[in-house]
Image (cartoon, rainbow, N blue to C red; front, side, top):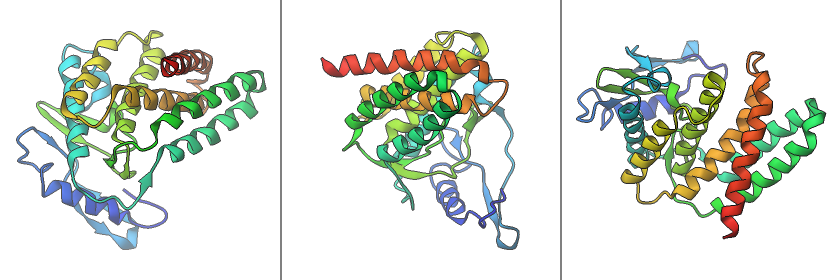
Length: 261
């Protein structure tokens, strides 16, 4: 990987720590990371060994989808258990700041939805207020199905460039939001992969005693709202923006109603 501002040595150190620990080639659970090869500082590059496999996203649709969803939960829970220091912090305030920046841009470019987007952002901020004082660990920060390659019984966890110290519920919620967006985009039906989503979150909660379903659902709503902005970045996804806005409004309203009881 090449990075304009210099080789990403911190991610290389993280991968080296994981590779020589429980994410190495002899991992009993088959959950590993690509082998870090070295740093080429003059080329602003870090090198990892190429690994085989298929992206988890498409495999979730098939007959192995249910057990693979559970395996994905095992992979991210395993990362959360590692005592690897992160040089970055990512709080719920950071998450809301990013969401606010993205949604304000969308509202400015789509003025006919400005009132709805402003109200949605207000709801997201109210949800985020419930997420302070959450448990903290090393988190992936961009965890979704394409970040896992499946090679038989082996899973490779990819792209740890954003590894930070933060709330592990963020990773779980982000994965769920991506499944919702993918289901809506591919099938026009957010329930198409509902059993996979349930398998994923239920397995994660079996493995983690510190994270609550409420926190996961909250981060899933925040991540899904960010997909409104993402949909505007790709011409083929722009027709989906309205449906995403509808879905986000429904999810946020539901969470706010639950919070009142």
